Image (tube, rainbow, N blue to C red):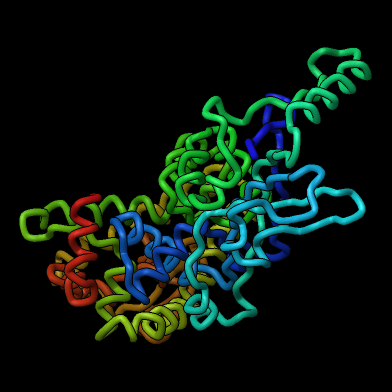
Amino acid sequence: MRLYRYKTIMTHSYQSPVISGTRLESAVVDPNALNGLSRLINGGIRSIEDLKGAEAAIRAMIFHELLVENIPVIDVQIQNSSSPPPGWASIEPELRDAFHKETGIRIVEEQPHIDSREDVSVILGNESFRRYRCCIDHLYAFEGDESEMIAEHNRSCKAKSVDPSEQGFFTLFSADSVELEVVSENTEEFFANRMNDRKLVDSYLKPISASGMTPYLSLGVFTERKNEIANNILPSDICRFFPALDADWEEYNRKLSRTLDIPMPLFLSIVLSMSRSRVDITESIRSLRDDFRDARRELWEIIDDAELRISDSHKLVGVMDKLEREAASIVPRIIKRNDFYLHKDLGFIFDILGRLKDLIGLGLNPAGAIQAGAPLFRLEASRKIEKHLFSLEIRGLLVQFLSDTEIRSIGSNS
């Protein structure tokens, strides 16, 4: 059965759940992120993209309370058929079809490869993990004499339509005459090819933007498109914190390039440094998530306060500038260890919004501190990251956990 499109313009999209509380509550990831995490924990790393995926998943878990996986799905509607198509028996029944006897139409779901999510549920608990089927395209296939059925349908549409642009013609989905049976046996390759379609990528990204959830996407085409149109499609809230931190961490990796074969993502490195073997990774992520509980709340409180409650544009920009500068200071501080020792026990004087915090333990006069100006600001998230990075040695870290085959796979694909 060949695949067809109804009309030539693809306008299909889904509705993503909308957050009901603060942005601390929910983060959204793509399947690639959680596949990477699963392979990190259970084995089977294929490329450096799996490491990037695991990093995205870990960040989402650390900085949010609820994790949402938006799974892109392409529906294939099969007309006039009452049995599964050839070659479809190998697909899991719950993912294979939804059959509507009264209409003679069966919907077959095509989705990317999904590894086990058992580890995610162990880390977060079932109440903090949600998965949603997100239909981003709708195709058609016919059992029987497809030429006659399509011809009859097109004749009917043409007779009823006045505007030629509204004529509902079926057209071949691809000039290569893609067969449904072939797709069912090569879903991963099929999705990789489909994700080169910019319209299809946007149909996945736009509902995420409308949801208000912060995205942690790792599939290459998603991140590239997200960066192109971040201001128009995806929220950039916490991105003010991460890019500054990531830029310094990438430079740190670059300076070690002669002795570090594989660049190490930041939070993935922290998790591995907390683990003795792969068996410990799940518990290490849970521990890190617990350690960052107050830090993530503070970070999102700052962002929400600034963007939703500050009416002065100058103050808003000033707060975001402080947030970015604070993130950019983390890696330099761990390099300059004397500075780290000097400041690590000082605690907070003011938060990023300039609100007075606990000075009593420092033996300082709050009024005098305010008059003196130039308050010391330290973000809790920054302090936590520094604490974990301070004694971290990334050289040789990855080989302690990955097999030789996995290491070679990463090297050949990086």
